[in-house]
Image (cartoon, rainbow, N blue to C red; front, side, top):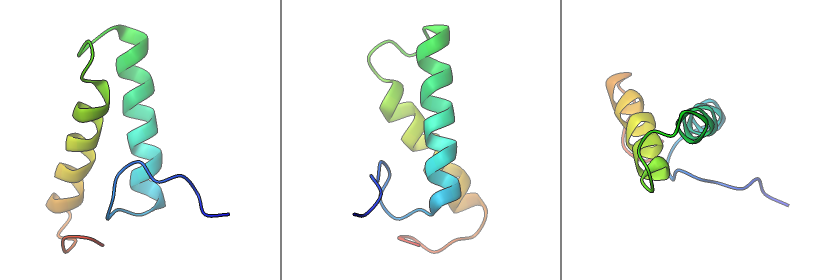
Length: 56
């Protein structure tokens, strides 16, 4: 069974990063109702900054 994917086009490391950011945001009460969006945007921003092509 394939692993649950939260952010499309990124690898396992970025998936773990997403989970960590999401958990931290929920715990601290930041970004009420937008935790998933902020976590995904942060992961994709880092992914792009590392020079990865889109979707990989």
